[in-house]
Image (cartoon, rainbow, N blue to C red; front, top):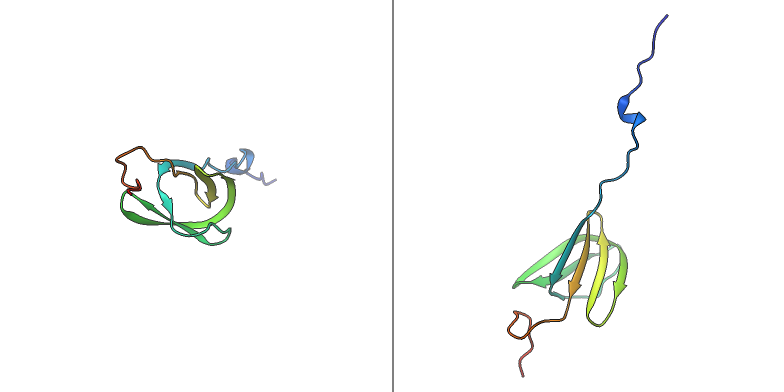
Length: 88
C-alpha cells in the first residue's frame, strides 16, 4: 500500500506575523480614508503608506491607523524647536 505523507506546514498553525508598529511625530497631509494610502510629513520628507485598512484611534494629539503591513501612530504634539513646530 501507499503511505500518504503529511505536509508539516499544514500541521502547524499558520498565524499571520505580527505587524510592525511605528511611532513618530509628524503631520498628515490629507484626511485618512480606508482603502486609500496615507501621506504624512516626517523630518521634512513626504511619506506614502500602503492603503489604510482601518483607523484605530483619532484624537487632537495623535492618530493611529493600520495598513497592510504596519500599524502607525503619528503624534502631532511637538516640543519647542521640533521640525513641525509652529512659529508666530
